[in-house]
Structures are given as structure tokens and as C-alpha cells.
Length: 429
Ligand SMILES: Cc1ncc(COP(=O)(O)O)c(C=O)c1O
Ligand SMILES: N[C@@H](CCCC[NH3+])C(=O)O
Image (cartoon, rainbow, N blue to C red; front, side, top):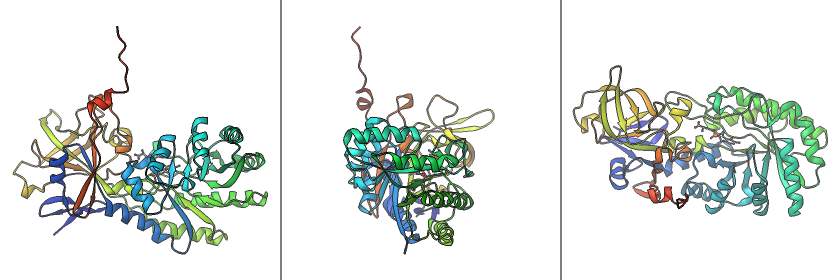
């Protein structure tokens, strides 16, 4: 009998051992040490297919949001499968290019693009700037003029829709810093169309992340299409409608719609208003990679406390910042099921890391049957984990491995302490 992890069918127990596809994870922990991120290529492919199947018969281009997981091998996988990319910095742009992305299929989002970033992106032939303010539009027009190269632009609109997600990752409410206010959108488009070095290509919105219901998306579609009608009635043609990303995944018991189900509804709305055959763009991140990865960590110590017991592991908030930042839940499971491991008594633990903060926890009140030396997997760690990792407490970043069937490949080495030190200059005293 095989059982798989929540939302992650490519991670499953076989003969009592947790596997990624056909590779037992304890062999990877032995070989590469911990903390270690392990990704399943089949899971990446299946998540991508779930989108592409929903787009049959429609004109949709998919731009993977690099911020979710920017490992070059993962970017290369998506590039080879024909994806475009959504980037938010020159660093992400250079990563996408290094992974083989076509510059014309990259869109550049973000509220604070610098002139240098605009210049670099224009020079490399970026597909579109998703401009987030009128001030940014003016600066981009100047940079484009200096280069004598028109800037392809879509204006990101803030539709003022509640994505019903954690407040830190909601982006489509009028109180959020993102996009141009809905009521300012038409004058902003008119301004864009009047600028000689700006070429208006489309309209854009992104309402938030880890969205698990359809309603906010449908509201955003209605609000966006209202604008498309008004903007086009004013004589400004929109070549594409970029709907952003944000679709949630199952971490515990969430039941987000499949990309197929969601887009069926969204296309139905668009069809009803005569926009169904337009060129749509999507920018998914988490839903492509989140459940394609786990982080393996080793139990260092068990510590009984007065109120609770602590399971101290070698991964920490610097490796997996989501619990500390958003009080996010990640399932934590043993690599070896109890029957094949040992007879430690099951116990309720707070799973915590070595970082010197009480906020450094990976899971609260978890029932585990563990002993020091055991390995655990922190689940659903493919998105916003390694890409948000830091060197806090001077801890080197973890290694990453990609599994494909029975094969595994190291795709990022564990950071060395020398590498962590090498950018700093010691002044002679
Ligand atoms: C502009 C933009 N596009 C796409 C994404 C990807 O979002 P998600 O990973 O939730 O799909 C984000 C992040 O929320 C974003 O800010
Ligand atoms: N970092 C967030 C998602 C941010 C989405 C980017 N706009 C998370 O881990 O859930």
C-alpha cells in the first residue's frame, strides 16, 4: 500500500520509506546531508499539464513566476516545456535568461523597477513591462527614449478585490501597494498611449497568493473586463489580458480549484462578454512548484519543556521562512514510518530550528514518533522556501536535488562558509 503526502502524489511511502518518485529520500539525506530540498520533476510536469489542459482551444500564454522557486534547473525545465516567465528584478531576469528563456516571453512585474533594471530589460528585448504606477510609466518612457527603443507595456490595475488570503500576500486591495487604482486606470492608459516611447500591449492584474476559492478571481475578471471595455472604447487596443497568478495549493486540508476548473469558470465569464477568444496570460508560481518539493531535516535533540516538548531539527526559519512569516502550516512527516523505524513513544512536539528566535518554528503541536538522528520531511516546500531562504545566524543555504524517476541530480550545492564570507571586506585596523 502506498500513501502520499497532502496534495503531493509524487511523494509517497513505499515499504515504509518516503520516496520522491522512485528514490527513497533517506538515501538522498545520507548522500547530501541536511537540510536538503528535494523536488520531483514529474510533479513539476504534472502541475504544468494541469494548466495547459485547461487552456485547450484558447489563446493563453503561461509565464512561470520565478520568485516562487528560482533554481536554474527548475527554470530550465519550464523553459524547455515552452513556458514564459514573470520576473520582478534584474536578478530574476538574468536567471531566466541563463536558464534559456526567450526574452520576448518574459514579463517584468514589480512596483519598484530601477532605471538600470529597465535599461537592462529593454536591451535584452523583454516581452512586456507590467507597469504599476504612472510615475513608473514616465521613467520608463525616458529610459526607452535614451535607448531609442519603444517599451512594450501592460498596466497593472488594482481591482480592489479581496483575495481572502493572508494579509501579507493579498495584493489586489486598494490598501495594497500594487497596481494602479481601478478608478485611475483609464486616465493612466490614456497617458501611456500618449507617450512616444511606450507601446501599450495589454492590461494586467494579480490579486494575491494562496487563493483557494474561485469567487475573488471571478470578481477580478469582471472588474478587469469592465475596464477593457472602457479602455478600448477610448480607442486604445489591448493585445492581451494578463490575469496574474495566485492559485493556492493544499498544505493541509485546503481544497483549491484545479487550474482547469478555475479557468473553465473564468473563460465562461469572458465568453459571456465576448472576450473569450482574447489572448490571456497567466503567471502561476506556487501552484506549479509548491507541492513538487519537500525539505528534509534531521532531528538533533528532543527537549522536554515545562509546557510543551521541543523537537529541535537542523532546518530553521532561514531555510523555511513561511511558518515564521505567515504562521503558515506545513505538514511534517517522518522519512521512515514508525513500524520500520523504532519504538519511540509518540509525543506532541513543537518542531523548531537552531536559530536564536522564538519565532524559529516549523510546526506547532505535531504528533511525532521520533528520536535524535531521525529524518523528517517538511512538506509542500517547493515554493517560497528556498527562494526566500537567507543566511540569518550565518547559516549557509541548503542544497537542492531534483528527482526524475529513479534518478536524482544535485541542482544546487550546499553553500560553503567561504562563499558566505567572500563579499565582505575586512579593513586593516
Ligand atoms: C505579479 C505577480 N505575478 C505572479 C505571482 C505568483 O503568485 P503565485 O505564486 O501565488 O502563483 C506573484 C506573487 O504573488 C506576483 O506578485
Ligand atoms: N512569499 C509568499 C508569497 C508571496 C507571493 C508574491 N507576491 C508565501 O510564501 O506565501
